[in-house]
Length: 358
Image (cartoon, rainbow, N blue to C red; front, side, top):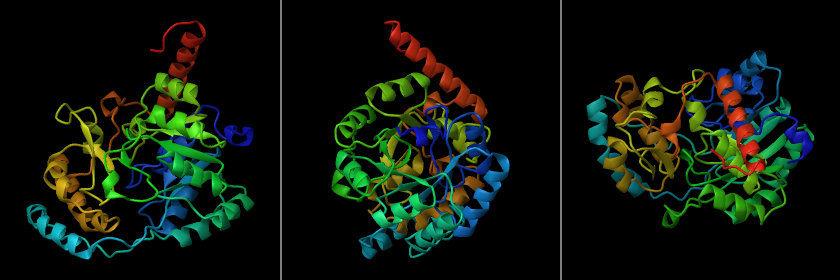
């Protein structure tokens, strides 16, 4: 990775931006202060809400940090399919005494307004999810001194990221919790994602820009593995979700290691786009029937998810989590960075000494 970008965070550890209130300023600040790269998630927030969180984060740390944006989505959802799914969810709405959300609540997530804020008030790093920004957007961010990162889930997507002029590609393996950052939502490819180590190796042979590896990473030994495969840093989400500073609901944190939730699955049940979460009642009952309609389904189910959380019912919540969720550690975020860095160092020592990585 270019020295200028590497110098932003001494440890090759990036805290993934987790939308929905998880990646709060105090979490990002703790990671930054410990030598990692903390991120704010601008997804599902207004431009002003994003700006206020940036101001709050800057009051907590003077170290570099990042902000993540969702790319606007094309209009290709079938309205009839959304209506059918809404009818199916009527029982959920009745059970939680909540109204279904308006599926037409907006699809660009305030993209242009957020970009304007980030051009006028530059931050060190901006990353993009669900697609590649235009070369003009990347160049504009570069002009104000911002590094640009973009998620890719295939080598072809990584090529598009490089063509756009991004500084690095975030290689997201199928193991990752939360939404897959595919550039196009193609239902026929559901379940065909590439595992992280294979993806990093393929992207390393495809592009010349640095790679940040993301997907199921919970231990320093795994960070060593992706670095050995060709990545320059590792991005961890679920590992930080369980920390004290995380803004995740307490039920969500507890579910990561709760033996009631034994596996994860990619589902469209909550948002209409493939996302990995702990298998619960809502996912089992509605996942097979959810249409490919993002963000319409996200807006539709949002009140149900909030009502389930208010009722203390984890079976109705979107419990986003990567495949390594049961390895989550309830540590302060800064301490977790230090532990991961120590495990990484031990793994490198074992490798250089001829031993195995633990």
